[in-house]
Image (cartoon, rainbow, N blue to C red; front, top):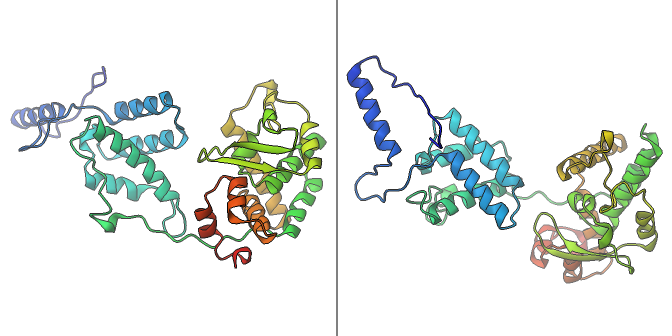
Length: 326
């Protein structure tokens, strides 16, 4: 399999049983399909996933979640004796979905991560690796549709933001680190950018009019927002730990850190400040604060949509309960 020898137990001690097991395994490996079903090549789940990831990389598509979900599918397959792609029937795909550790009632996480796997099987079917897509069609079988109800967005108040920033003085961080985190938070508050977008804010993205044009890391949607002149000057005066980004810094020994490491570190720092300030929120709360504040100030939904790179429909849907839209 994939150029390597593999041994499996026949689970029997009789010669006849071993012979029968060998015949069945031979049929499985040659993918001898039952009556009328199209024969497809036998390919391992691992090989199919690697081919999928290479395809995405070649076409400039993000691979963070595909790598994560591909790894989860492989781990599940090993635990459930699923080696080949054609062994993943609709029943097994649903069992795999049920094994995922994501919330289902109030979070879109399960739907988002399952959509990634649907993309994998859709491509596998499209290029002939499986005779049919094993993911159940939710239009035909609506019982398999993932349903959830988003909780109402509760952005932090201005007072809570001030308390979070005030907690910086109580940490034992170096003065440079405190200042860097302060400017990171102020950028999120004043630009409405998500944590990854803020961490990867390029020095060439801040123009002379203090505007930040770019594409969101998560959705690739365009956005353009203007930040206060004072904040723009502060960002430009930050120590140049990285020639490309404002808020990046070097690791121990001066090595350049990965994007995932930078985002993870900022997330940990912000959560520490939230706990000290006794504020129940996540880093994304700063984005919610920016959007609700702009709407409350009279900016139109279309104008805010342009600032944050989210469709007007999604803003109306997410912030419909906000006093800014009532």
